[in-house]
Amino acid sequence: MTDDTIFGKIIRGEVPAEKVYEDDTYCAFKDINPAAPVHVLIVPKKPIPMLTDATQEDAALIGGLFLLANRIAAEQGIAEDGFRCVLNCGARGGQLVYHLHVHLLGGRDLEWPPG
Ligand code: AMP
Image 1 (tube, rainbow, N blue to C red):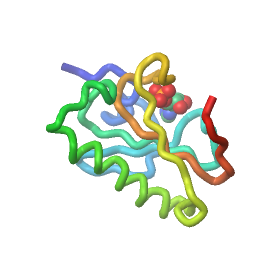
Image 2: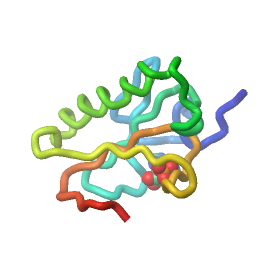
Image 3: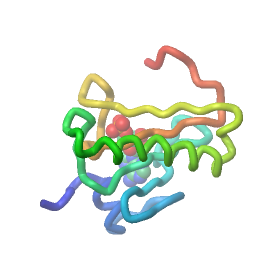
Image 4: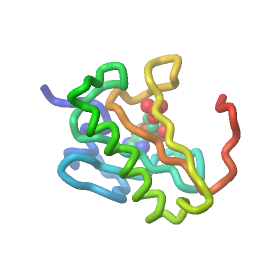
């Protein structure tokens, strides 16, 4: 089944994006509407719609998302000062794109709690 989300199209190269990382398993690109000076979306190529669709089989894939966030944070120069990883799940979690992804945010002081 084709992943018809905007992220599926970016992964397939059908829609342009400012990619900062790509391998066989993951793709990472700059958010089109950045909420911080650094705002990168880290996306597994496997089209899991949302966190609640992930299974034990995806454990390494999900863990790898956060390890990749570490690497990209270092490359983007925000690892030392600190950053935030956000995974929105479902309507009330603020998820807009139903292809699982992690937001990597940094480059400014981030408030807590989020809105
Ligand atoms: P979420 O609300 O967690 O589903 O986040 C979806 C994110 O995707 C939002 O921060 C959007 O700004 C971002 N987004 C939507 N379309 C694009 C696009 N074409 N390129 C990059 N980021 C996008």
